Structure formats: structure tokens, C-alpha cells
Image (cartoon, rainbow, N blue to C red; front, side, top):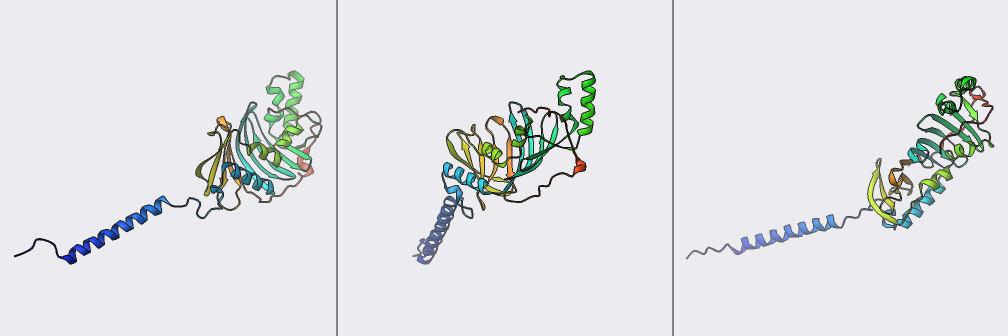
Length: 259
């Protein structure tokens, strides 16, 4: 009589194969579910939002230099910044609705180089006319693309200096408002980051590097107030006073800029 049951050896083979497949599948699923998102990072992502903020602020404060580039929106208008900053100076450009100007500060000495739109600011606002307007236009032609040393007692000095002050700008950019929360893992360029937010983002969003020193790499102001990237941390750059041939004396109070 012939039995229809499979041989014992075949049944064992099938059982063994099933066990191997199940074990492999279980291991694969466990590996996927248990993957450490902070593997190969500086470990900052494991910290709380408050701890991450402190780490980022400390890293920024200890760096000798940084580049800020992006857009800031204020009640006075929209500014596009591209500034290199050091502890005792800075250089770069600021673009507003009506004009573009470059700033250079070495210690307390502040130089301004602007296009004719900046020097003609008063004419555009309608505050000058006739001979005054003609004189203002002549002054704009003379001053365009020349460095003007800004007197420390000029009302514009403090405002313009603020664009070149590392501590002033970073204190404003790295301050999140509201309850701190830890957000998503992102990338700024090719660098992995962890985000922290003020509230759900209405108080700002800060991307902190997960590679190397935990520098802040990107700041988005809440309410569409602009986005600024922070790069070239601790990378030195030259600061030299302009040549005498490139410097002129404005001779009167500088035009006011929006704030």
C-alpha cells in the first residue's frame, strides 16, 4: 500500500526553511524599526529642545567668525543680507527696497559704500526740490561706489553698525519664542540637522548641525519673517580699511535708512 504522506525528510526540510525565512524577516523588521537616527552624528539629536538650543548658542558664541546670508522682514521693509562677521568687525552687503549698500567695520570705524539710490534717498521721498535736489544728485554721483566713513555721532551709525555686529545679529537670530519643541530631522546643504521650534514654528525654527560642532545652520523667523543661513563658522577672513583713493567725506548727516 502506497502512502500519500510526504517523507519525513521532506517535511523537516520545509520546516527548517520556514524557520530560516521567518527568522530573517524578523531580523530585517527589527533592524528597520530599531535603526538609530543619531548613528554617526554628534549626539545632539538625543537631547531635549532646550538642551539643543543651549548647545547651539554656546557653539555660536565660541566661534570667531560666521557668514549670514538670507532675508529678514521687518516693519521697515525687507532686507537681503550677505555678511561676514567677526568679534571686532564685519563686511558685506545689505539690499533694501530702494538701494544696496556695503558695510565694512574694523573696530569702531565704520565705512559705508552705496549706490546712488541710497544717497538719493531724500530726493525720492520728496524732501528736496530745486537747487537742493540738484545738489543732492551731484552728491549722489560723487559718493556712488565710494567708501564713506560714518561718524560715530551720526544718527545712522548705530543702526548700520548693527548689521556688522556678530553678537547683535546672532542674539536676534538664535532667540526662539514660545515653548521649545524638537522638530524634524532635515538637511542644510549636505549637513544633517535637527530642528527646534518655538511653539509649532510660529516662534521661529532653528536647524542645528548633527555633524561635528552643533552650530546653528539655518533660522526661519515665524510668520514669514525671513530665512537666514549661517555658514563658514570659525573661518577667518581679512578686514582691511579701504584705500584713501576709494574714500570720500560725506560732509553732512547721512540719509536715514528704514528699520
